Length: 136
Image (tube, rainbow, N blue to C red; front, side, top):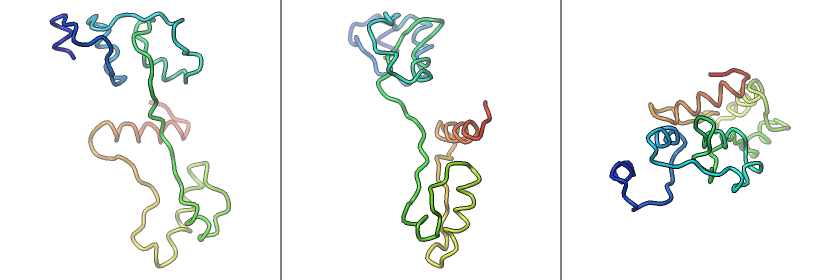
């Protein structure tokens, strides 16, 4: 896409970019500013829309959002006697201790994430810090 943009090729008229590329493509004028009124931005999550903007202009339109989710196993929570699914960071920690007590839970962990040295680690860290009231 960059090579096509640098040579002013007309091979692509619509690009699918990750949010990290919006500012670079806009800075180099490889993508053009879009008319905000033509898109239902008010029906989208504001932080997601902000990732499509650069220096006050709209240069992309969100097609999806990769919102973080914290899933729970209702079967294990029920078996451990945990009534409601956890909602605070203290609650999953307490529930984990109960879930891991039965012999069949040996070696089980209660939290999984993308902890390799790539974007997943940054995302999981950010989700944990922000959900606990902190900020980066």
